[in-house]
Length: 249
Image (cartoon, rainbow, N blue to C red; front, top):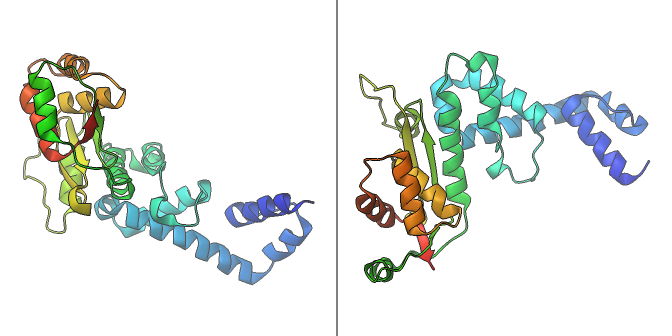
């Protein structure tokens, strides 16, 4: 059996506790291998806890550990560095029977993921806001390029941003009477630190359109179709001020 197959069988033994390879099977039978497997899974669970702190705070350590271990058994890391581990964790939570009474949990997890992606994103220069203003004043229909660290998400049915924000901040607390409605979020990374703010449906749709390569006029039309009463100028100014873009062309 080739070295590649041996490696595949070794991973099979680690993640599923079984192997058809005689040598790997002999390793699997040793008590030390069980310790090794537990150490591997603990590393994955610890990485998920670090990458999804709002989820952990919401559900508690025991529930989170069970869900994280189940995820780890089904999703081997694709990188030895676990700082980005758990890309599919929000979708995994959405499919858990034990999470049915927490319909907002996948959305909260998705915002935790947005934070990680924003933190790990490449460095982009800040937008030249004065040059953009001049171009728009001259009637140019430019295309805005979202900043590499910008992440945004609109959740149409759940107040996921409020729940996430309260559980992401050490001293955060939910409003006594949380309004159960859709919410959005924008995450950016000025000066190397991830920051976040609420974002309405129109702003999120505008950013989607910009990411798809649409011009400002086309993106504004898409945003208005999503939110007819949107003040496009104020929305665009807010996104520029927040640092959502890196350039235009």
